[in-house]
Image (cartoon, rainbow, N blue to C red):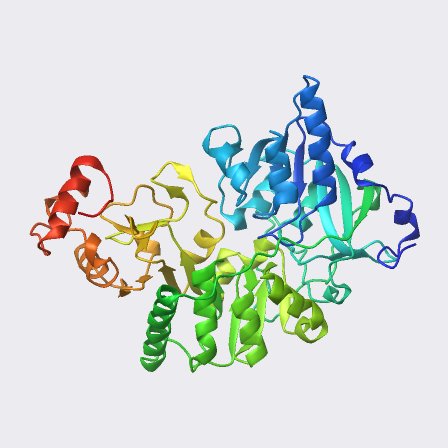
Length: 504
């Protein structure tokens, strides 16, 4: 037995990555662990990619369907995509190689709400899972599994897969044991019952994953880091967005619409979101809680400062520096963090009942508040909707944030009509750019349009309230007279004629 594998029975199944990968056959559906670059298998997928390349070179194409929790890392998505080894991908992918192949139609991509993946896997509508490849921190003497740095859909993968390959990664801190809360009470209708979670810090499950030992066909020992990417230091734009959001939250507290410690915060991943979290360190809200998908650097800072009492998520998404800090102090953090299955961390009913304050990014928003989170110019997938839909529709306050321009100021993020809509205007309550904040609650479409233009659009890109809006919405919104002179008119005319978003 090793120090990470305490089950004598399962120790007999330790093998190398190439032998484990050889168990996988073309056309299989592979369900792998991993969420935002944390806790994904690293050795077996690379061995599988080598085998795929050899088979393809011999004239025998080898492709599989790949399901995960969310994005993973280059050792999984990137390695398999590079050898044309992925036939179908769900529910989210951030890998650049896979993205190009998805956009060329070489990978069938199912962009799904993250909370819906596990239930649909149980329903069987997505098909059967042949093999699960799941990274864990260790295996206990009774055969239960110590989860890794993400939980994601691992509970479902282990339950539903025909066979299981485990990667036991000793890079993962052994002190992770006890941080997780794996709830085994979910059911399909008509046996479904309420989930007994009342507060973000409630524990309703067990710290361990279970798996039928007869299904475990191989165990591979690894020592490989997660894909931890650095966050950029907040620039003036990010700081301005953070400032607008914090001012808005102050106002809501002063009006009695939020408690002084706020409601549980949810934050999407990225530099802007991380800047907002960092800005909360100097805001007068404490002690805060978080009920979110991922714990990122800014949330770790809030825990260190004492402003954040606890954080519930399904995974980490940390810079290398923050990951080192977490690992050096894991025992101290463990009691203030909970990692759950994503069907619980993103559960719409829990988000609604807890009253989460949702803060997510976007690609573009139109003047009515419709938000595009997934498709550049309406046709090229960027990553996917992720969990933003789970939170936005059910949040107590739904906030979307973005710089007002992209590509060095060449493209506006505020447009007359979104090229694609992931979040309809009824699900978008607040839009924020560095230009300002538009609180859209209780406003008609005409009022929303005026406020978004005045508060959020860059001065060089402000759409006009012309008869374009009336035509686009069947004349029902009553937007007729131009409200802005000068350059905006020529830009708007060009948009109408060509669809381009370049300024005058």
